[in-house]
Amino acid sequence: MKDQSLLARLPKVDQLLAAPALVLAGDELPRSLVLRAARQAVDHLRQRLLAGEAVPAAELSLEAAAGQAAALARHLAAPSLRRVINATGVVVHTNLGRSLLAEAALARLLELNRTYTNLEYDLAAGVRGSRYTHVNDILCELTGAEASLVVNNNAAAVLLCLQTLAAGREVIVSRGQLVEIGGSFRIPDVMARSGAVLKEVGATNKTHLHDYEGAVSSRTALLLKVHTSNFAVVGFHQEVPLAELRQLGDRYHLPVMEDLGSGTLLDFTRFGLPKEPTVPEVLAEGADLVTFSGDKLLGGPQAGIILGRAEYVERCRKNPTNRALRVDKLTLAALEATLELYREPEKAIAQIPTLAMISAGYESLRKRAGRLAARLKALGLPRLRVATTDGVSRVGGGALPLAAPRTRLLEVAVEGLSTSKLEAALRAGQTPIICRLEDQRLLMDVRTLIGDDAAVVIKALAGLAG
Image (cartoon, rainbow, N blue to C red):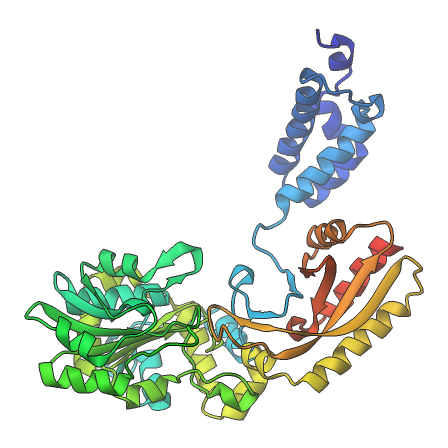
């Protein structure tokens, strides 16, 4: 039998609303949220009592319940999508928003979203225009493509190309390239949704040109190459170069398409990283269509970019499905501003955050880690232990899976808190800090700390160890 006397002691909602803690919250927050929080706080206490939980009498007091309701109201008012600090060292972190935009892109977004724009208006002719013209010229300038089309992500780009060129017909692709990307999203599934018929050739580790040629028939519509940016096959491995697929396509009058996945305009070997085919290189080798993401190695907004021969790009543009996949003015504004930086590659490397983080050298990272460690030690908190150690970062976003650029890590511990509890506490902070857990150690990689992140880390650890 439930303790009715405790249930009777539960504060009323109107009493909570009159309590100082909720009156103060009501001055800051919408009344509807404060009322919702008060009701939820009382209901939560009631459910605990009905479940037979031994709730301390102090928690049933008006002051305690009002405090809980005020905290809940502020939690309800907080935006769901908010800033976090990436201390993982994964630069293009899919779960944390992938690439960060350059300041030039952010400024362009602010400028063009405060005013009307010529999104679909031809200023020269005074008639309706196309939104796709705004980035077409610069994409073609930077890559050598004849034409371009931008949709909302790379999966959409692949879907649109396959549906346009191969619906109801066969697409030949190497078995070793049928990759699964983030969120259990598989290339064969995209192909099936496009209406194209998958024709696998070769073995998982080896595919030869004669495998493709042996599969060509009257039903063949397209030769597809998928860059396996999410994983790497090493050892006994062979795939057909794009130039040879181009020759095969010419013999049988078939278009050739390559899905680059991440896609880059720069050669990353200059940073000591493994070779990643660049978009201009793939187009120069003869791809009729190339697709890649805008928010991975390019360092721009989320987008799927289609480049290649004008006749195929135009067919994709006229496909009614394109209407469902089109991008808005925010994407186009940020993408154009990002691409403009690539006209001067050194400026792009310095000003596009993704490129700046990937290209950061070990010595600069060692100094940054040392400065942050020194500031933490200067707090003079006996419970806080900080050390620096070597480690590796990751590019992320499914790109360069074998790349492990050397970095410098902070190893942090707080006496009285287990590593898992410390990690959870940092993650639950006002500005969540996302760290790495390795071998029972909490690690922070300075490669992905930006702006005032270090100050936030210091404040958070001071609060936990103070």
